[in-house]
Length: 302
Image (cartoon, rainbow, N blue to C red; front, side):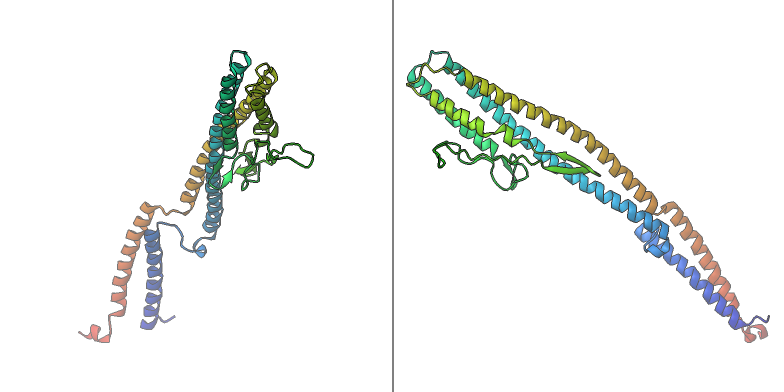
């Protein structure tokens, strides 16, 4: 086959174009520090990248859920700590009133203090973080405790206590398919019986009832305190589990980031070496092209 100058020129242009294309890819890798910039560059790397990125996004969402879970548990524990202290103070006052040494006015003072502590328990029951009530089950937009004075009566003449009985658990997904309850049982801790018994206790402490036995009230208070302590123990156990799960999620984030980096990130040492090599090839090709294209018949006649 006869090779003409035109064939040499066309082949040169084709090869130099391919060389520029390789230079372009290496240049993109240098600029983006990624192996590929489009799926067609390497479909396998692209598919793995999507999978790793999805996994990393899930892990980061779980980490945000952990923040919300800690918010629920830490604030619930702090609220229950306040409630425990209030109940213990009420028990202390009740014991003092039950020993028969207090005068009428002194019993009245005790009753006033217990009344304030009862109202404080109501405030604690209605603890709100952000726009969510912590002790009303899944109904986080409405306060669990309303009027607990016992002054409102129903159609039968019985006092009405506006205390929610919603105990629907609030669960957050903290790992794939693993849901942890983050709210406490407000229905058990701040029950209707609690406020009913406190009102009864306040009434028994009126100045003219110095001989009333408060033994049952003390037992009720002990029961309320034990319920609180048990709930705090439960929430403490959940908090410990959260910390263990959070450590695991942190490790999963590190692993997912590492896998994604190994799959997508360019090996810069190799990219720089390829660039230098390609530049050498480019210069050699251009030099060769200059020698192939430049000579004409006039060059041979000189």
